[in-house]
Image: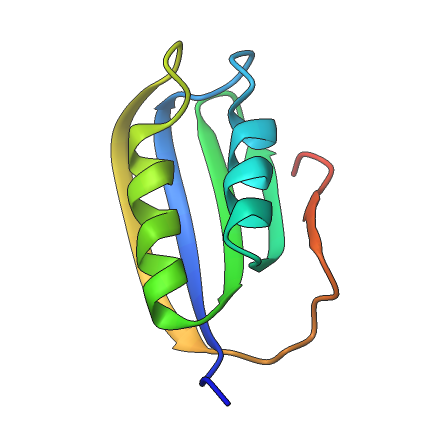
Length: 95
């Protein structure tokens, strides 16, 4: 069985009002990842995703690209130990 890892991503830029959270959720679903995504303030999105390392690396690249109407200016990430606590990948309320 593959090891489950976790990545915590913070994205800054033109990421609000452009379908960014829905895009992130779709990317996670296509890679069979679990976790969540939410807005923080007006120009930031935060996401936590869990799954196999290779899938998470593909996810990170997709998040860095973003949907065509968005503009990712900064993307920071932290690798963490996976917990397996999520059943799916959801869009959470803004913080």
